[in-house]
Amino acid sequence: MGSVKASAAAVGQEEGEVATERLVDVAQKAADAAGEVLRKYFRQRVEIIDKEDQSACSQFFSLLGTWGLGDRLLLIRSEHAFSGNNGQWTMEMDNQLHSSHSSADLIGPVTIADREAEEAMASVILKSFPTHAIFGEENGWRCVENSADYVWVLDPIDGTKSFITGKPLFGTLISLLHKGKPVIGVIDQPILRERWIGVDGKQTTLNGQKISVRSCSLLAQAYLYTTSPHLFEGDAEDAFIRVRNKVKVPLYGCDCYAYALLASGFVDLVVESGLKPYDFLSLVPVIEGAGGSITDWKGDRLHWSVTPESKPTSFNVVAAGDPRVHKQALDALQWR
Image (cartoon, rainbow, N blue to C red; front, side, top):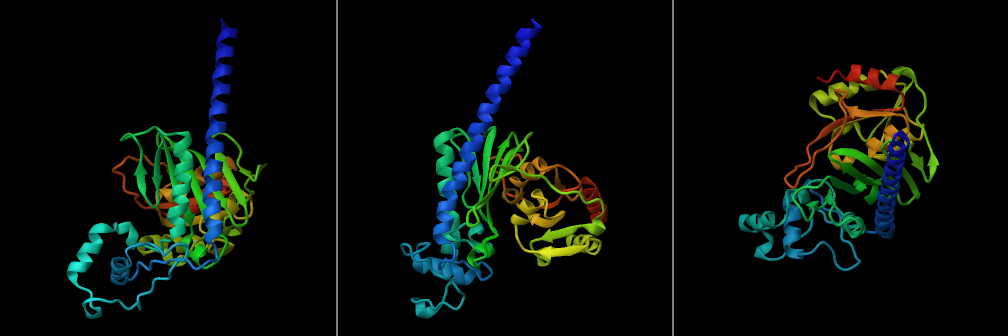
């Protein structure tokens, strides 16, 4: 009887590994599809919606009526002149615009490449797993049902400002959640053609080679990355300064690429504030699979129970290669 149970367990494990391999294969194909789109648009003239000037964006959308003109992408600036109504913008026109464009269209730069890459990924995933759900940064929830055990969370361009300024340190982020837990994560840099893959319970790989974080016992010896010190506000800014003042070298930039460098053993600590779930969920299996730690600023594990009604809330994230530095960073943050 014992041998029968052992055989059944082995079969179950083998079937699970096959299923995981298929999921990873689809994640890779989705990253390939996004990469084809992004390489096409990288360092080209990209349509930028400057959401810091919402009225200017509204006027342009209303008169243009499209995101672009064929393959030609347009730079949108607040100084655009607008025809009609003697060049004046009316409240009626503004209300009409805001009823047809979501608030997400009015925050941060958005590009045609973003949307096209997300659609390319979604097409690949749904072709293989039509009952899975997708939550994309650009288009939110899509699923044939109102709930799903498996949810793919997509961020086609993490680091849009890097993308539109020609810096190849942005990334495509793909995460697969199973009942809210990140079980597969992909960080793909399509220009440098670097791909980090993290799978729950397995060692992280970079282009197929296993990688690991490096040892660093003291915060005072740590190299710290954050995207920008200007992204911290209020108490979060004070908390970040406490950490920054204790590390050996603070560095800025890179967006998700900083976490990839941490997983590869080149960086010791990443501290960021105000991240959305699609910004960090894919990072969890990558960091943990390389031997690192990634939590919120209280030290709690990161997860997201997503539904059709879910609104991406903001999280404060800290990742470290060495658990000792992770603990010291949490102590310095003093986030309660």
